[in-house]
Length: 169
Image (cartoon, rainbow, N blue to C red; front, top):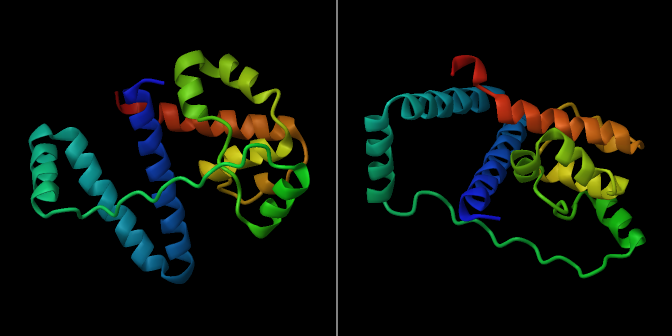
């Protein structure tokens, strides 16, 4: 994986984590979450549209020190987790990281390549991918018991994220 792919994968992960945090905030303070989403969208849209604004924003953040919290280290993976241990971890709400980044696979190999990489995975591994990338927007996917439905959800969410904004290009 190249540095650009790794950087983009990391960015997508951070965006997913931010989205999950906003969803948690919306449960306790919906108006604050809505206002924060609107603010971040306005700033990001303007930075994407205006290079001068993006440069000034980058300079302002850099000048103010480390405004962004450091990324916590990734949890260490067990060499070979037993199926019973994985199921116990899933019941506790803590999932293992997915076996691969579906966004990187989609970028490199397209939809067919992504489906081929998803095919040999078991339900728990598929659910790990769904959880890691916040693809359970309707809170149904983690209850599904068929791999094909999870394959479709993962492909659907990756394609949706990948093509987001294409209508404006």
